[in-house]
Amino acid sequence: MTVTVVTRWTTPNVPASTKVATRSRALWKKLGALDVRLNQMFTGPQTGQWLFVVVFPDMAVYAKASAAATASADMQELLADNAKIGAVMHEREILVGLDF
Image 1: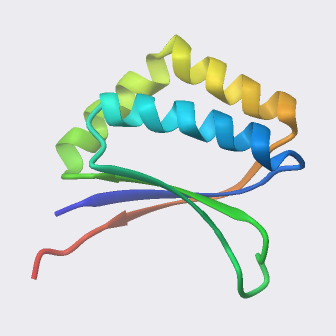
Image 2: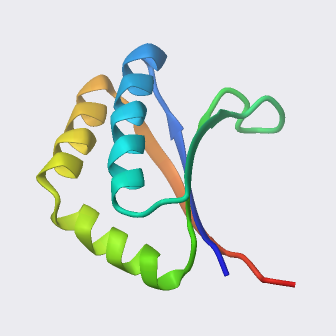
């Protein structure tokens, strides 16, 4: 049963935030993520906003990775760098996949 974390962002500087997302991807993969994606929304009321998506194989890996990221100086630096750019997180959703 996968766990997918989706955060929705706006940024005034897409190239700079993309560089932060690339660094963040490397960190999440190191912590056990199966996949990390950056998507731009092209329809609906949030058109132009960005989705940063991290997929974990199960709840145990998600919990361990989440705890490690929270304690990580690298993650704190990434969040600070994105804040300096002016990026704003508007929403976070956690999706639990059903094996069927």
